[in-house]
Each structure stands twice: as structure tokens, then as C-alpha cells.
Length: 393
Ligand SMILES: Cc1cc2nc3c(=O)[nH]c(=O)nc-3n(C[C@H](O)[C@H](O)[C@H](O)COP(=O)(O)OP(=O)(O)OC[C@H]3O[C@@H](n4cnc5c(N)ncnc54)[C@H](O)[C@@H]3O)c2cc1C
Image (tube, rainbow, N blue to C red):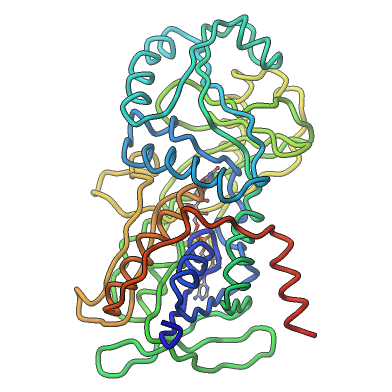
């Protein structure tokens, strides 16, 4: 197995989980990342470990994946989550009427729920709007968006993976119609060179389409940016969602001493062009204030945007209607051997995406090695830096 070298493009949640998956299967692995690790979408999301409840009604496949991974990650990455649960709050007639559909959909995909009276919900979360009609408790949690992928990378490095930050893929090397490596620009040393590989996996998130273009293949990724807002104080101890289909500004969560609010969704062709429209920030603040009135008293600490790497859907889709599930693509189907892409999903489902991509890689190489990531505990995130220090000594 160690004779087979797999090169992974992108050190976001997906590339990090994949490096871990492939090293456990015994492959030799190199990860190249154009910036610092997690500098793409992964380092900028809310940090919500989804229970899947948000998607249960509109996107049951993604919901099923989320609840499965929520359970696995709590097991293999103990200590990485604030296991505080989430509340979906009903504020008006429409929300209240949605409760029945929501509960049935959660039950259908195996997400445990608990209906709380206003009094019970306020006892748990005194900052909630006292006019709430009811709340539904689900196993959401909060994670550190950067440290969880670092744990995947730390474990992969300990198992032999090479991680090269500030190495941007600028072209592909071919033998006939087979990819045999990539051309990288090393931004640290200002040099360009070729890295040979038996197989390349494009895990470049919202940039996966651009990376695919360099190899002459089509990757159906649809960048879908969204805005996030941080407040300088922790207002709740639980994740708060509005009890309605996914919409703008309906998530509020505590991140250590801060509060993060999100989000909006639109479609874009350029994941590097991420404006933060004023009206999005305003809409997010209004929607969050309806759930937690104290939001309206707080100054904005910062606001930023990130682009989801969604799987492109039908023509009339928008950033809300495209599924949060994922796709692995073998580009041999369009005549290019030795190249696989993995797109879509959530940070919550990165391990599952890596399992599917790892299965495809193993199958393509005609090998047999089962995925072991479901049971393998991850090293702490600090081990990522420890192994970096060790390798410099
Ligand atoms: C506003 C918003 C909020 C979200 N909130 C949540 C949440 O709370 N919970 C959750 O589970 N999910 C959330 N998501 C989804 C989640 O953030 C993404 O699905 C996930 O981070 C994508 O990870 P990735 O590794 O596929 O992509 P990325 O993290 O973008 O990684 C791809 C990497 O490839 C690198 N790259 C690109 N081109 C090249 C190249 N040529 N050479 C080398 N490297 C290259 C990039 O620099 C980048 O680091 C949110 C997304 C958005 C937009």
C-alpha cells in the first residue's frame, strides 16, 4: 500500500479527513494547500456540529448524514465539542404549525427530539424571547472550526502523511490521458516544481471547479457564499435555531466568550470574491434579535463571508435549495484517469465524505483496505504543531 502515493489538493475539513482516512488504509499521502491549513471555507464557518435537524424536513439525506457523523465525531474527537444541545424555537403561528412536520421528519431520520414548554425553554436559556410558543431540543453542539480538522491532520501526519501549506496547484502532469502528478507553486520558497502521484484527489472545496479546469475536467461545484456575524459577548449556552425551514439569520450559537450569528446564501462564480453586504448583516441581526432580544443591544464585533462548496443542482436552485449532501467523482468517466474529486457536504460530514472518497481511491487502485476512521480516536490538535516542530529538528 505504501507504494501508492495519493496527493490530496486542499487542507480544509474534507482534505484533512481524507488524509487521515488514506494513511489509515496504508497509502503514502501528500496534502498540498495553497494557503495556511483550514484557510478556505473550513476556517470561517459557524462551528456548528449539526444534529441534522436543520435539514430534516428539506434535505433528509443530509440530515441522516449529519446525525450519523455527529455521533461518530463525539466518539473519535472527544474534547473537541461543547456538547450543549440546540433549541429550535417557535415564535409565531407559522413556526408552531411547522413543529409537527419537523418532529416527524426528525423521527424519520433518527434525530432525537424533546418538546419543551416556554417555561422549560426559558429555564434552560433565559436569554430567549419570552414570547416563544415552544422549543424543541436536539443534539446540536459547538466545535472549533479549525481545531477539528487539525486533529485529522495531526493524526494523518503521525501516520506518515506530508502536509505542505502554501503550496498551490497551478497545473497537472499527464502521461497520455492519465494524471501522474501536479505542478505546484511553493509560495514560501518562491519555486515551482512537480509532485508525482499515482492518484490525485481534488478536495479544493469551492475552488474544486477551477482545479478541475486545469486538468480539463468538469467538477459540478456551485460556490454559495454566506455571511456570518460575531458579537463580543456570549449570550446563550445552547445553539439556537428558528423553528422553520432553513432561512436567513436563523442560527445563533455560543463560541467560547462570543456569539456567532448566521447566515445568508447566494450563488457566486468566484469563491475569492466574498463581499459582506450591509443588508445581509442587518437581516441576520434582525432575525437573531427576534429569537434572542439581547442581540439587538450588542455591537457587531466582526462580519465575514465564506463560500459553501455545494453540488450544483438544477437551473432554478438557489443557495438554500441545493442539497448539503456530497458527491465523489471519478473523472475516468470523462476520459481522465488518476483523478477524483470530492465536493459538497458540511464540515460535520467531512469524515463521511473522506470515507466515500477513500473507498473510491482504494477501488480504483484495485486494492482492498477498509475504512478505519469510524473507530480511530484522533490525536489532539496540538499534535499537529508538535509533529511540525519534531520534523524541523
Ligand atoms: C457561511 C457558512 C457557514 C457554515 N456553517 C457550517 C457549520 O456551522 N457547520 C458545518 O458543519 N458546516 C458549515 N458550513 C459548511 C462547511 O464550512 C463546508 O462544507 C466545509 O468547510 C468545506 O470544507 P472543504 O474542505 O470541502 O473546503 P475548504 O475548507 O474550502 O477547503 C478547500 C481548500 O482547498 C484549497 N485550495 C483551493 N485551490 C487550491 C489549489 N489550486 N492548490 C492547493 N490548494 C487549493 C483552499 O485554500 C482551501 O483551504 C458553512 C459554510 C458556510 C459558507
